Length: 193
Image (cartoon, rainbow, N blue to C red; front, side, top):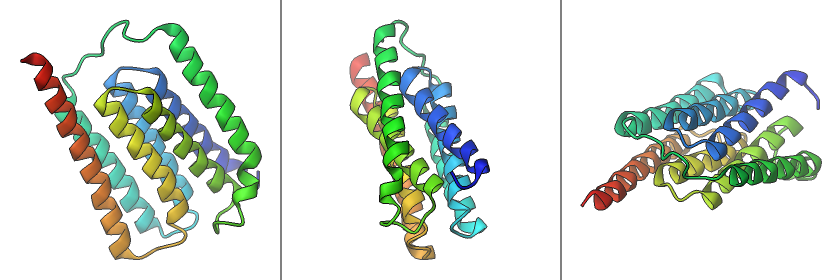
């Protein structure tokens, strides 16, 4: 590790991934999503302007806010997931993260970023993929897509700093959150009938 202060965003990305993967409560999941976007901001600001990184942070927090405002009345299903399942998910995630920290150095010649940024992006991408692969809840799948996209954003921002492209990417983030909320609401209303 080149700079020890970059350890903070890596820890935030890891904590956000665990919060999304291991807990069913919406507030904890949204706190994990917000931690992921704040960590992405801290990594993006090293290779882009502060304004661009702040725009990405605000867009991510707006997506989390949209999910919260529209679905804050949801209560988690008690006992819906056995304890062994959570332990397995967290163990698998930690083992994959350790592999990422070992092999992240091999990807540095593909992108113009430092080691910590590459490791953070890969941690976010793998965390998002794990949430996508292990969840059946539409909101958690939406948050998994947003975390996966935040990892991609960490890698893509140093390559392209165009305002137009980043504006379109911000629009895509908001549309993903909106579609996820719509699908979750629609899915829940079908069960009520």
